[in-house]
Image (cartoon, rainbow, N blue to C red):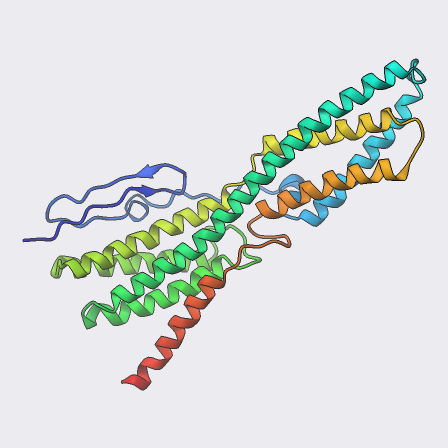
Length: 310
C-alpha cells in the first residue's frame, strides 16, 4: 500500500494561496516548482524609493522641507489682514492642532505597520533556519544514495540563502545567490521525487514535508521583503507634515528657534524611523541573520567533520 501525502495549503509570493492535492499513486509537487515563480523585481528606481530605503537622507530632506514650509508660512502671515486679531489667531491655532493631531495618529499607525513588518521578517529568518535544519536532519534518516547528496545540497542552500538576504543585498530575483538557491530547490525536489517513487515510506514522507515547508518559506521571505508601508500613507503623511509646519509658521508672530526646530525635528525623526524599520536592505535597523548564520556554521562544521568520522 502506497503512503498518501497531502500537499499543504501554501502561500504564494503574490499573496494568494496555491493548493494542490496528490492523486493516489502520484507525487505532490509544490506550487512554486509546479507553476513557476511569479515573483517580479520591484518597480524602477527614483528619488522617492531611494529616500524610503535611506532613512538618513530622508531625515535631511524632510527636515529641510518642513523648515522651508515654516518659513513660507511665516512670510505669508505678513499678508494677512487680521494678523493682530486674537480671535483670528485662535482659529489658526485650532486648525494647526487638528492637523497636527491627524498627523500624529497617522505617524503612529505607520510606525505600528512598519514594526509589524519588521517583526514578521525577523520571525521568518528563524522559521526558515528551522525548516532547513529539519530537512537536513530528516535527510540523514534516508538511504545513503539520498542522504549524502541531499545534506550537501542543503548545506549549500543555507549558504546561498544567507548570501541572498545579507545586509546590503538587493531584492533581485536574478541575483546569482537567488538563482543558486532556486537551482538547489529544484535538485532537492527532483531527488526526493525519484526516491519517493522507489521507496514511498513514512520516513520519506516526513522528508518531503520538510522540503515543502522550506520552499514555502522562500516565497514568504521574498514577499515579506516586498511588503512595505503603502505609498499613499507616505504621501498623506508628507502633506500633513508640510501643512502643520506651514500653519505653525503662519500663526507665529515672531521667529523662535525652539518653536521652529523641535516640531520639524520630531516629525522628521519619526518618518525616518518608520522608513528604517520598513526598509529590508538599508538603514541602521536591520533584521538579524544570526539564526541562518548559526545554522550555516553548524552544517559546515558537520560536513567538515564527516571525513574524520569515516
